[in-house]
Amino acid sequence: MKKFKANRDTVRVPVVSEEINGIMTRSKNKTQLPFLVWDVSSTGVGLWCTELLKSGEMINLTIGQPFPLMLSGKVVWTDDSNDDKGFRCGVQIQGGQKKLESLYEYFSSIMKDKAASGD
Image (cartoon, rainbow, N blue to C red; front, top):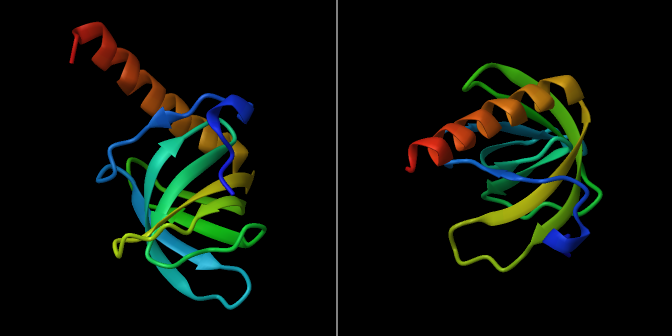
């Protein structure tokens, strides 16, 4: 079940989906899936992927842009309302926290710049 905005501990920054993508490795069976990042917070990421993940599942994320990152985390919510295009999930990062914070700051600064320029 989704963790609603009112229950979140941190603020999420939206991400243009083409800006961050990567490969996810599922810890249980080592299968790999592509993913897109929809939003980033200082503690986790919101993802879109082609297979439904299970809440509690451990995954490893490899991201190539805007800079290389390897993160590990636990799926904390999933959205199984597939519209034949994919699934959303929330991942709490448990390994690579400082790298995640760098990514969060990167996108926070982009959003601040857009707001300041009126875009």
